[in-house]
Length: 238
Length: 380
Ligand code: SF4
Image (cartoon, rainbow over all chains, first blue to last red; front, side, top):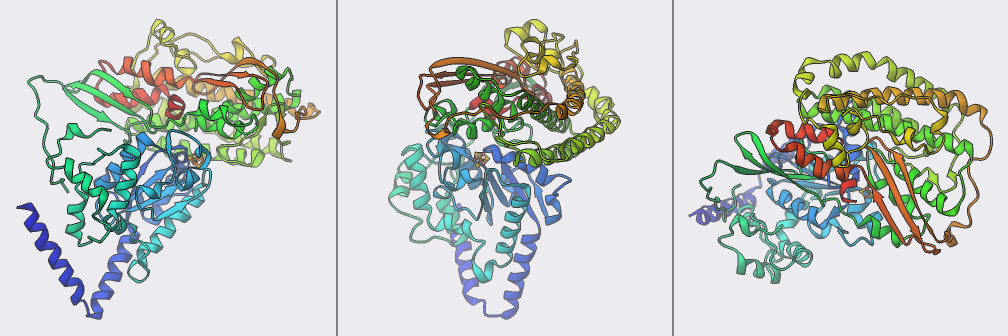
């Protein structure tokens, strides 16, 4: 039942997209992007030491709220996921679960050099080195650790990307996760083992958003199908 | 969106149920998790789940030069990094058989006490936020930022300064620094009344914090509790006084204690300690200009620096408790083994599990913050 409904919906959205020749529709899209960039809820997952510069950035002195960005406690209602520092393998699983629970459009910011290339812990056995192998990242803020000003600058850049999304396609890294799910899943499986799977059915979501691409299916998603349906919560090995 | 393949877990007959707090949760300090078994809203059993921040520090340090390790040691405890550097430097100095010059020792004390102030201000805010009061958090973080500005001034880094090296400190204090510091101390003292009214004697907070997470002196000793948490149980133990390092034996300061051992006593101890640190810093400001001399004992070229074989255990009092480095050298250019004795692993694992038992669920976050544990230091 569910699946049929989804298909109908996705067909509709595809048709709508093709029909948009009315210039007013573009203005409307721009307006939506503008509004979106002015009101963002942020989920900060304190994965590492970079998190210590967030309280100053959020509170009185640097005051992130004047940019229209506020902390949010649940992933379901958040727009931005801040990954603040090195991600150990154990944490990375939770980061991926959190990311998949967020509603699209969703944005990821990698704070700290450790999310870029492993930073200080390049030779550590316990950390995952590059965050964008496991999920698409919109903005990186390098530095060990970046100052609150840098954090604000990064957020501003994300806002601009969102605002100009329709023209420049910069703020849509999240679509990449659906289009190239096979690649991301492959990297995740390499790190966590072949049985790795999350309770979120990413492929169904890709269909819902009309974002299936060639990279959505592949070698790695086939492995997924062998073990999926139905997925009991206990089977999830973290 | 509920995933298509979702299935509910059937519950058994028992009244007890299980919930997870963390690792990404506003009531948890950092990246840390708790698994609670509850009956109604009373915790039957709490199990901690650490390891989210594990980086394998002790192994990493074996693979780096003595001097390179200085860059990673502060990362072990993020809110209070200065004691890490000092402790590691003290241990290496002990193996090498050298002492830092007197002036460097005074500057180290200055750095340690400033770091303690910053860490305590941060804790006040965190603790208050778990009881639903958010204003102290805003105040605490803003005032801590003033301290960080001073850090930036004399070490070059806001949070991680990497200011110490074995043999001394890296840089002389900038001109006019002591006046700035003195202004900051005046300001912090002038805030005392505000903080008291807003937090420490505020009934909203006191009613929540009194009698929560009571730790007796015997239990505290059994669980290896140190630092402000131990002093809140009535035992005046402080490494600065009982096993003096640097020039702490030349300084005058009290060791604040409380008797009850609950969350409120712990935050009061921290409050008093903050003012003791200000008192210490005033003595440093008075004495430092009259102490002339070098700030560093020469060490060999750090890139080919072999520390003689030996081992050392150096402990300092951090804002969380007793912190120690055990360093073994086999005469090579890298440490043979480094062990970190952090205070937080005792506080955040056994003690938290012990205190969570029988507590109400809304107090669990407060107990954790009142113990002031530092998750990166638990996992290392
Ligand atoms: S880049 Fe530096 S501050 Fe950031 S998480 Fe890594 S070690 Fe910590």
